Image (cartoon, rainbow, N blue to C red; front, side, top):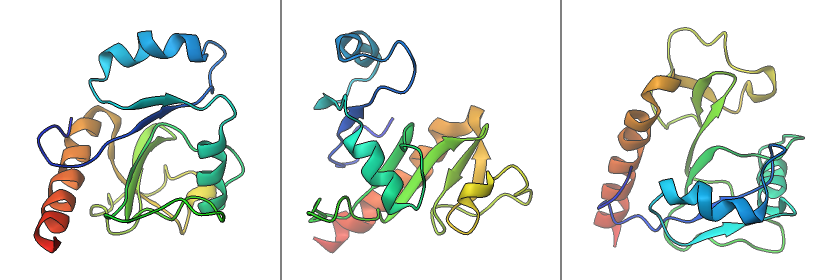
Length: 143
């Protein structure tokens, strides 16, 4: 999806669905041609992101954009510069990721004030590219 943009990408799988197990990751990740990929059976990353966003459930099915030099400290993961996720049947993003859709009624209550609806699920790949390309260009020119 974001090949060739110069973005360092990591995939972390966490068990959310009943069939999600570490042994299943090689089969699931065969469709994702990104390396490295990890399995976090204890959901440490999903839980840390939940705390960072003030949520109670682990964060998953999400894409986070961190600037160069961002680090996970003893306090947990930093808040990403930009983030998008599949949530409540729509694509949501942090403020500043993309322009909000006019209809914000499908934003789940837990995310009000923290995210905006930026698109429909069937446009997810295009939305990801709309965010990734300028992010990569901005940080490439800052080096």
